[in-house]
Image (cartoon, rainbow, N blue to C red; front, side):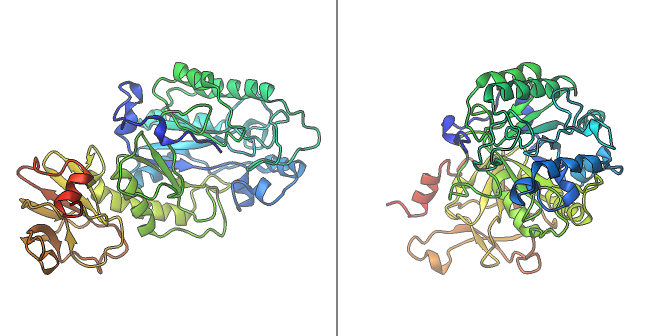
Length: 437
């Protein structure tokens, strides 16, 4: 699938300089995958992956009745995790719509539940001042005009279908108009699965006209505003900054984005490392949960979000309103961020020992604090045996509690009188390190 590479905007873009700039202030959000697939509790692509006939799958709508859906409970879980915005799947590949759409009967209003879920969440977000983003799948396994051809993430041709891409785009455009007109202010539109790789900039233009604060991702009909690496799939360099705005996404579950009854979960440490390696490089991050068929976030997922929140609240100052600064050191086992004369050291990879060398930094901090616990961090500026060639006294953090805190990502705050001497590029750091001669 074409996702319009980050190279579309070579110079690093810091701001949109319009209402979309909320995106650079609220870096961590909750992704929610929810639809009829929650009833079977296996995968959000159950219809496709389990080869369920369309006629059988659509009958799930007769059982859609999530009586315990409470948008405020979702927002409470979001806030427990330290998150500041939410993105909901309004229509996933199955084609079932979670709002009162006039474009198809295959929606939540024509079920035993009979309520507009997007509207309920939108009202709660407006009441609580939470930015709302909406996901929309281009692929549609239900609509007769979508040209299902058996390509990736498509059904094979179905009996009774009348494939017509132009008619389907009319349907899609009107659904976009509904979502952007009927639910108050939106802050994002998250496209997915433009399998035909169609380009039509007028569709995103419509979103911008109706919702000027909405950021748009790069999986729709043009390159959008930001890139979307998924499940930690990205280029090999985990330290370089991105050439354009980025929002990474990951799910708490290893198998599914939607609700799965027998889900296998990522470790806290893996998710913290993933979050850290993106936020420290000036990217946003969406962490996903899949509510069950009754509308509740599963206890395991809720508990995981709370644990992530405990870590994030303790360390968030290293990731918000900061600049990437990993160029300041040649140590590629850590990431650095900076705010004025404060430097944050993020141990996003498993530390191999209890010390971290920040070569070629030769500045003495005024204070060194482990944000995870608030305790002081021992440091030294001396020549160690491994630096016998250069005889350089480089800053070294010592006796970090890597064994006692082995299930988390450590973040150290270093406060200096003056950081003007910090290297401004990776090349400078490497040269000072003696790696470039």
